[in-house]
Structures are given as C-alpha cells and as structure tokens.
Image (cartoon, rainbow, N blue to C red; front, side, top):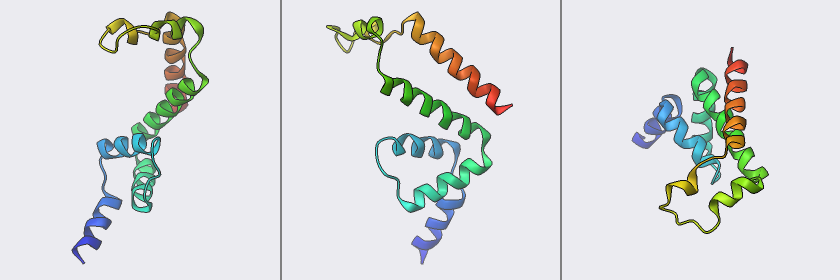
Length: 108
C-alpha cells in the first residue's frame, strides 16, 4: 500500500529537475508508464519545461543532421581533454541562437 501512495506522489508532484531528467532519459530509453504519466502532467502545467523540451529536441535534431565539414574537422584527431575539440563554429553558434530565439517567440 505504501508503494501505491509513493507512486501517486511521484506521478502528481515532480519537480522541474526531475522532469528535465526524465526528458533527457527519454532520448536514450523508453520511459515507464508512471514516468510518462508524471512527465505529461508536469509538462501540462510548466511552461519552462515545455520550452526546455523543445530546445532539447532541437539540439537532438541538429545532431542527427550531422556536423558540416568545418565543424567535423574540430573533432578529428583531438584528444577528449582538449577544450578546442568542443568549441562550436560560428555557423553552429548562429544556428543555435536562431533556434533559441524561435523557441522564445513561440512561448510568447
């Protein structure tokens, strides 16, 4: 019985931090029914989390499209601890900035 009430509490009262983690997890694995239900309930009430989800999906979409040639060259032959391996090209920065501006306009 205690587990039932813990499940209900989880489903109806998750924080933005928990919702963020669930959104991220959903990109890598299938969420359980309880997790999906909790996330849907939170998203219905939280504008900030809806914006974050759109941004997360936009970033994932950009990564799936692939890096253009100058961005890909940043990663070739560089060690993981080399900070320059993780810098973005001007083109990538502009695309991200435009996507973020679009998401902000959609929220207004």
